[in-house]
Length: 229
Image (cartoon, rainbow, N blue to C red):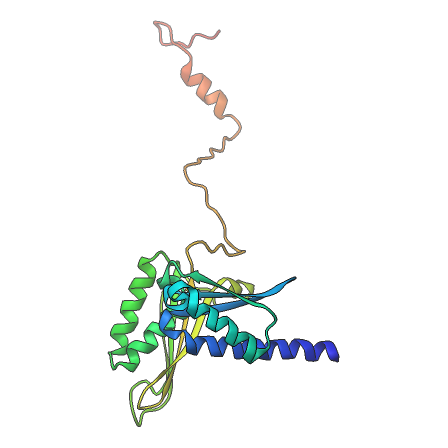
């Protein structure tokens, strides 16, 4: 039972750290966090769109953040490593946040969704699905769900683990709208993938074809009779 409590406590701390960092560095284009325990320290990987906003001048901001994580969450020797997201249009979390921000600014949802679909597919994605759930039509309307899909998308099975998914909320006057984004990245290869070879032709020969071809190639004499060798 002590081991179970230990893992539960680690999960709670991880959730609290992620919530804390997502609020603190949201302006830097926060995507996700990975926490790894190494023999001498606790490594915290931050994936963001604009790393300079986190590091600060001469690394002062990241030093303050490291100290705050150590004192607030009792993390043993935290080491923060900031990684830049090179393709924001292929990161489901960043795409979901951009849609939520546009909706909060009052932009037309369909225009935002179709523009996002084109941007994601133009970046090389194999497929993308965007779902909106809540009071989408405005105040007084019923809650509903709208889904927009383009390209190839997996819906079931272990292949879902290979689909990048992002979740967030847009806070509007009419209520909260949930935004879910699923992206199949260009380098994803599903277990059921089959390669089809092109340009190979297999000709089946029936018995007697060789004899028929041989007879056609035999020369003829002046009388029209075939000359057999």
